[in-house]
Length: 159
Image (cartoon, rainbow, N blue to C red):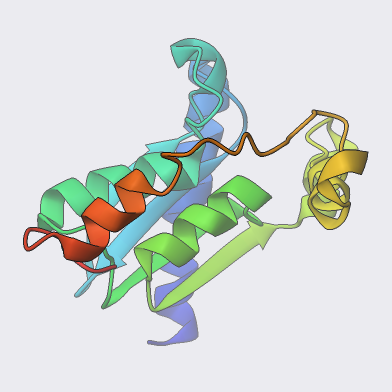
C-alpha cells in the first residue's frame, strides 16, 4: 500500500470524526476498516448519543466490519482511526486481529482537549487491591463450571 493510499483512508477516518462533531453525535473520533481496497466498517464515537461507554469509533467500526464479513476476526483488514486508540479499543483491536492499525492524532493530542485516558493505563499497571475501582475475586465452588463446559464442548469455536 502506498503513502497516497494511507493518506486517502486516513482522510476518510478523519472526516468521520469531523462530521461526528458537526452533527453533535459524540466525541471527535472516527475510524474505518478497509479490506481489499474497500471500506467494510465505519465508526464514529457515539458514547454520549447512545449512552454507551463502549461506543468508541474503533469498536463501532470493528463491529460493523465483522458483521459485513460474517466473522469475529479481521484478518486481511486494516484499521484507520483519527486518533491513537485508547486501552479499551486496543483490547478490541487485538481480539479482532487486523493486519495493521494506523492513527492520526496521538493520545497526548486527545488529552489536550479533555480526553485523557492516562489514568486507565496507570490503573491497569497497579495491583488489583490498589486500583480506584475495587476489584476482587469471589471464590465459589462452581467458579470453573463454565470453563469445564467450554473445555469439553464440541460446539466451541477457538479464538
